[in-house]
Length: 384
Image 1 (cartoon, rainbow, N blue to C red):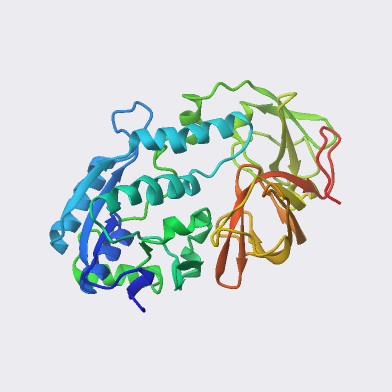
Image 2: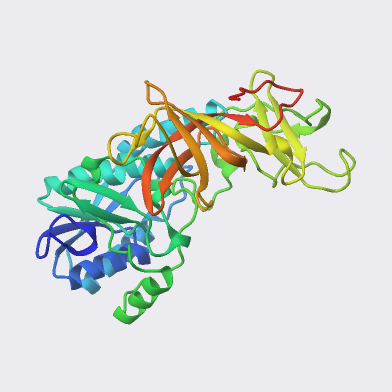
């Protein structure tokens, strides 16, 4: 059966839409209403405004959600998932930083909250399907769903959705799959939606506009230490390893006179045992390049890997072009991935996500990398 937007049911089924107060989710609800669905909006409050360290304007977003619902003449609920978010997303976020890694909470939020507790709540309310404003697409064959890249490649959010299961995708739909961001804005303007010109939100909700280092310092203790170059020479001091990520250029505070010429410095690694931050000069320094990686156990959209060994393309960060690679799956689900050409700033804690043409296969959290060269200041695994 062909149904709109990849949904598993046709109109007039009840669909619960995750309304954030932004233009994407507003147009999602608009398109569903116009297609004849019985639409209910639901705002997920994932962070407490009275938290001294939060800075998300939830009150403003709720007001926008209510204005959207009134304009579309649909009911709306506000549900507090803050406790679930802290337990299932934020606790992991802090644990990863304590390990010296750089997590991606948006991926975990999608799996645990938006397609976890939100999905469960919506179905308990009698919904026959759920929908979000993600830029992604679904293709259904029988009871199976494939996750596809959307029409707007610049806004493609499949990277953040790769950890979803068949059970989570079964009731889902993505009404923006065939639209570009420009078209979404035009639809919102044409329909007179009150958020048609609202600026897109950026960053992590629970941090908001607060400087990232200031936010983390409230939760993590960090000890200053040396910044060393690849030859072990001291070139500066860091303020705490959790506050840096691989490939970072800004905020290092290293002046001239420490290296060759005036090339900028970048973070190339962390030596947690010695509390040392390794930095190098040059955007494409060999220590910023990796030929291979190992991962934690992977998740697959189909529920299983394509094969024990296969070729595909992969991204190691959002907005990166997918690069050819070879993947080997161990018995415990962990992966060894070798790229056709070196990749820059591959970061433990982030995710590697796999694609075949427009199909997102799944992905895994990066555990370790194999750099092109090994600095004198630390040892690195080699997967040669």
